[in-house]
Image (cartoon, rainbow, N blue to C red; front, top):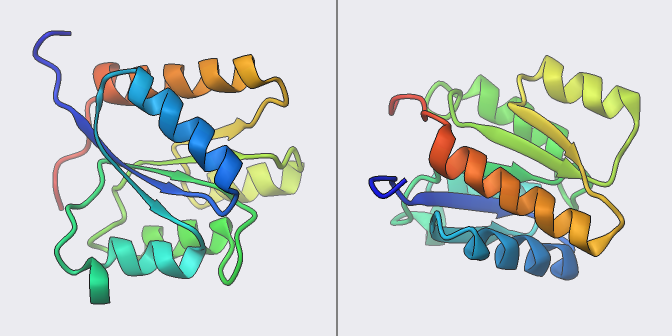
Length: 146
């Protein structure tokens, strides 16, 4: 693990409390180089396409995407990313409160890399995000740049 590359995350989450929990847990895992945050789906797509104020931002290695977002929901973001040849291979982890089977089915239909339901228990939630950080930051081999 000493030679691991630090990972850049984009967290797409409108709930400040959930975002704070995820950010703290990711930082605790010590595999994070950078964590950017978008508060809705429109902002997420502008960030990923490096539009406007996001022109100089580095491309994230992984997107953590909530489904229930204002302006453009997470499934729309996921589908848009998969349809964009410059973004299509970007790993996307769904992190949501939704346990709806239709949401999960659509997420995988649009090629989400993972679908995680946020636990209600704080410690379980923290542990899930730490494990997510370890998996994507240490064990996973990222796709090549497109």
